Image (tube, one colour):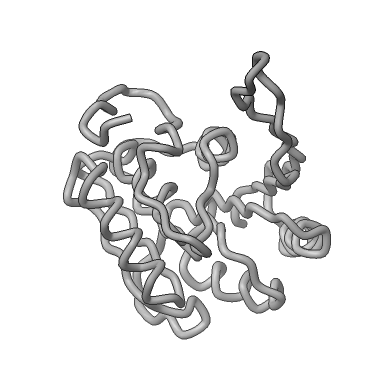
Length: 200
């Protein structure tokens, strides 16, 4: 699919539209749709994408929050930041995004975000939520995508322990059709946990 062909007002830009690079993760289309829904975004919101990887969520968020909103994608890998910036330049409708090489634990600023998406993995979940508390206000939406069981459990536990409201966890198991010589076969992708809630 040509990059210039995607001009629809729906969540879920097809995966093949994005520039890709070996070893840099991307939140896949079906998980993006679920995660964006749980972020409960509106135009004008300010959003942070932690561990932005290829920038697929950064792009989608940018297009949803519109010219009066903003999204900041951060990642600790320079190659990921370069790829995310390339995807944003190609697919964002507005210049409302920034992509930076940064570690969330070192992030400084007085800015409070209306929503935070966590796509990159970490073993320091408690410390991550300490930082999320610093950069959000009451009612900010927080969504964590987790592949590993301990990340899902700890994220859910942190939200409950910290008094988040509307806490939810969904396990999504997606299979995609792959063309074969005789028709289509369904190829399973990794199960993903989507943990969401509103900060206290």
